[in-house]
Length: 99
Image (cartoon, rainbow, N blue to C red; front, top):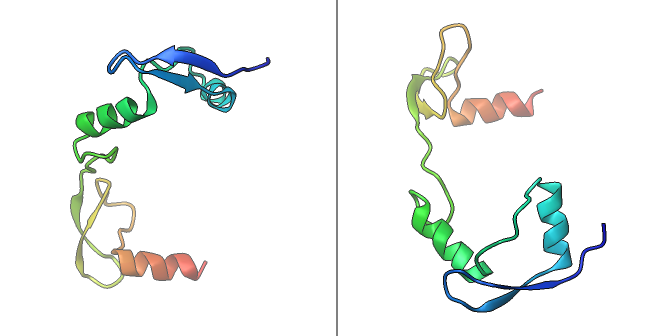
């Protein structure tokens, strides 16, 4: 499929913006079927507004745990289960380096 730059109009600000051939290829590889409705600056503003942390990041739920290596209290981004070890960041990094 041949892609060519397209001029589109932003639904938020009304400005005309270019949907480049490279962006179209990227959208195709991601499986997106619709063209963008917003210009890049309005997309960034919308993403920052809708994100719990602003700027596109999401707050991750953390769970309390005790490191199986050093015994230090820590928090991990998953619910610990009894049949798998849990490590603090320092111990995890040491174990990861020794593999």
